[in-house]
Each structure stands twice: as structure tokens, then as C-alpha cells.
Image (cartoon, rainbow, N blue to C red):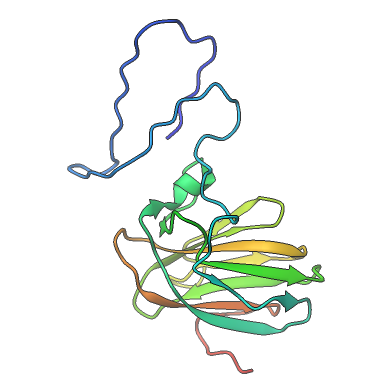
Length: 184
């Protein structure tokens, strides 16, 4: 949550920080600033990634990697707006992808047979693309014409506290990504 006001009066303010669910508790950072920019965007593609994927060039076809999903940071903290769901690593992305060439479609999916996953992609220009359940309980982000550059990929879990193994799948071809294995 973010509250902003203009022309704040001098004086003492009382601030309550709460959780959405009854009886829940969590640590949080309280930030107070006079800057007009985003307040909660300290998590981004420049943080240390759990893994760096092999660089890909337009025309790569398909690629996949095994990753660990989840983390202790709500996905909404990354967006600063609360629009991205799930629990992601707060120290940086799950994976970093360097794409050269650009212009082709880039479809990214996170697949797990037993866990409801979420996905947040930070594009080279800083945009955040989020998904939760495009393919059943599996997230897929489709970028019709992906630009060249570095992508931060955050694979999250819908439920807090889970840290399952997941398969990160990347493809230029349309179609289902999690329902069938890739043929290389």
C-alpha cells in the first residue's frame, strides 16, 4: 500500500501498518519520502539473480531451465502498485536473461505439477509484466515483439512460504508451454 498526499501539515502523524489477513504478521519497511517517484521498487532486474540463463538470440526456438520458485517478498512490492501477485525473492530475480536481436515473440512460462506459480518479468525498458494462471495454475507471459536487452524473471508462488522446484520455459512459438515437454 502507498498513501500520498500533498501539502502535508506540520505536526505528529500516527501510522498503522497491517496485514490483509486476520491474525497475520510480517516484517515490512515503512518508507516516507517527499520524492514523487515510486516508493516500493527496490526489487528489480539489477539485483543478484539466482541464476543467469545462457544468452539467447532471436531465432533460438525453445529453452528451459530448472529453478527454485518463491520467496519472502510479495509480488506487489516489486510493482509498487500491488498488481502483481505471489511471493518472489526480494534480493533479485529468479533468473536473468540476456536477449540479443529482438523483434520476435518471447513466451515465458513457469511450470510445476503441484504448485500454483506466479510470474513477473521486468523488461529491458523497466516495464513489469505479470501473470498468475494463463495455463491452468501455471503463469505465462507473452511478449509479441521482445526487444533486445536484459530481462529479470521472477518466478513466484501464489502461497507464502513455498519454495518448490519449477521449470522455466522460454519459446518463440505460440501455444501451450506447460502441458507438454519441449522437443529439442
